[in-house]
Image (tube, rainbow, N blue to C red; front, side):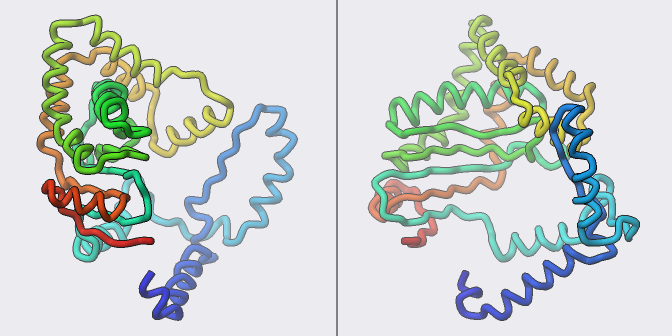
Length: 289
C-alpha cells in the first residue's frame, strides 16, 4: 500500500508485466480450464456458444506447454517461499479498528507438506468445532461464533482457530491454548464411552454425505479432478473416519501441543489490545482506522 501511494508508476509497471505474462500468446492457453455443470440436454444446447467462446479466447491452442504442476515444482515457488520468510516473517499481529468486539484467529501447521493426513482428523476437528470451542468461545465466552478449520482431504496441514464478534481477546487465546489438554481429557472419556465416540464419527460421516445442489456437485467433482483424487483414495479416507479411535484424539492433541509455526492475528480495539498485552499476549499492533 505504501509503495502504491508513493510510487504508483513502479506498481503499475509490475502489474503490466504480470498481465503480459498471463496473456503471453504462446503459453496463455496452457493449463486453461473451463468447468461447466449441466445436464446432457443443456450441454448439447450450449455447445456452439461454448465453442465460440473458447475460440475467441486469446492465445494459441497449439502453443507452448507449461510445466506439469503435478510433477514439477513451479520455478517461482522456492524463491517466493524464501522471500516471504525474509520479508514477511510470521508474527503475532493485531489490527486496531473502532469496535466493541474482537475477531481472534490463531493458526499453525499440524502436518508437513507430503505427510499423510488420516481421515480420523476430520472426526477430531469436527468434535472440537462443535464441542469444546463452541462451548468455551461462544456459550461461555459470549462470542457470536467460535470454531476451527482443518481440511484433511484437500487442505495443506494447517489448523486454525477463529472467533468473531467476540467480547474477549486474551481469554479466547487462552481457550485456544488449552485445546490440547481438553482434547486429551476428552480422549479418556471417549475411551470409556464408545457411544459418544460413535456419535462423533456419525457427525463426520454426515459432513461427507450431506445433500448437494447441482452447483455443489459440480464444484466437488471439479475439485476432485484438480486434486487427482481417486475413488479408492476417497474410500480409504471414509474407512479411516469410520475406524476412528479414542487414541486418534490423543494423537491429534499431541500434534496441537507441538503446533509448528504458530501465529496469531486479531482485529479489535486499542483498549482490548492493551488489556491483552497486560495479560501477556503481546502483538505487533497496527491502527487500520
